[in-house]
Length: 258
Image (tube, rainbow, N blue to C red; front, side, top):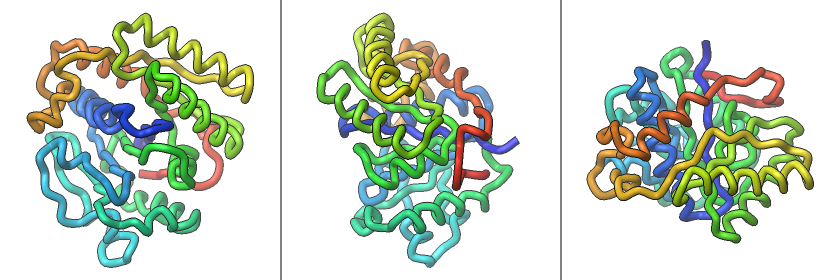
């Protein structure tokens, strides 16, 4: 069976998208899944910083044709590897759809190695974000109760809906006070999505604000890796169990195959 591909996006920066991606990967790794994180935030990639790792080769090298994608894989922890987008490469935003598709197809060289591919996308709406989400099995949109976060998440949903009729999109409230608040926020954004763009969203749970949630940035050890009894860890384990490989009919055009 091919790897399950999960993209993590947000309509705006500061939503906790990267921390979410890291902890989701850790939750999967802790149950024995082999996980590859693709830090697609080319130019300002920082997943490796959370694990206190140094990166030598990145996706930038693949794009420039100086290395193969297999050579960019960096081990972060047992069962977790990383392909970094690198930093300082401002031209990536202008790659165009053909090169974005070539990047997606390059992952086929890693076929049969991983159970899951987690893609940490740049914040906002861009051709890169849209094309990678179209090519993925699961698509998380991370948001919170801030009105601008809701507006930006809905703007991203409208763009995605205009590009592809069917998509598996999971709206996940992040850093909320309670899981009841998370469910209410999901119902709000799902109601807007169903009413105005005829798109139903999935809900696998939310992440409540806890002291250990941002643990990785302070210590280099994500909370879902070290603190298996923490509240946030339990919430990530629950979300990880809900990941699945949907029917192929949900993806049209280029896709990740690995």
